[in-house]
Image (cartoon, rainbow, N blue to C red; front, top):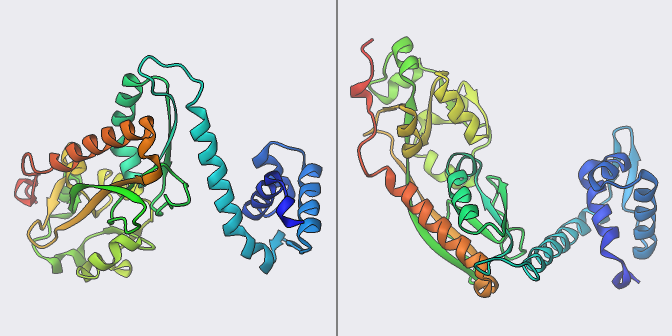
Amino acid sequence: MAGQVEWELYRTFLAVVRSGSLSGAARQLGIAQPTVGRHVAALEAALGLVLFTRSQTGLLPTDAALALQPHAQSMESTAAALERAAAGHGQASADGLAGVVRISVSEVVGIEVMPPLLAQLRQSHPALALELVLSNDVHDLLQREADIAVRMTAPRQDQLIARRIGAVEMGLFASRAYLARCGTPQSIDDLDEHTLIGYDRVPPYARAVLRDYPALARERCQLRTDSDCAQLALIRAGAGIGACQVALARSDGLVRILPQAFVLAFDTWIAMHEDLRASARCRVVFDALAEGLRAHAHAQASRPPSTTRSAPPT
């Protein structure tokens, strides 16, 4: 019986799990709340399982529901990939490139680096639709959660086509206003006298590297956020000293702190599933992003950024 369950019921099931209520799922899906209830009841009857229990805070998924969730999410990703693949067929375009390409990048890259690259792609190929997923999580290309992903670690799956973009250098930076107000640290120990900006929960790709810099441990950072863009905004606003990409810091006129003592370099990769090799639109987007991101990575080597020597006297 379970093999005959329609995808629509699983889609509703996922919405209820994510929202924790029938009303929340109804808003997500744009359907009536009673319809959501009927879908859940139909799925429970088809599977012979109780999927949710009621509580004061809403609907709680049972152990059975939690076991089903990753499989339903895989179905969701496959359905979305099918829709993207189908979208490009039957659409006319001057260059033959049409359809949807879904791109997963980190938050800071998506906001600070990708917009001009996507704008140029749309100018060159107006029939393309580009979906940008901003997340520091690694989206699974094998499950087709995205068509193309930009990552700070080398992809390990054999089924992926991957291209190394280059090393993105990061350093400690502060605004000139902050340094004029608080002084310029001359050593790692001096950081104890300054406001540090860092993560609340360090992302996996940064954990091993930051272990080499105990001065930037979570408990030593007075301003903490898991948003890279929020960290960058705090540095720009003169709130304290934090780590950011050298290329972005240069464009903002930020001042590098302790350049000899603190140097991070993260390899950047772009990857897509090998099954998309035959997709002209994915190949074009992949190549264009690789070229644009490589130019961004190499921009930091074109000229040295400001260092503490150019900071205002205190």
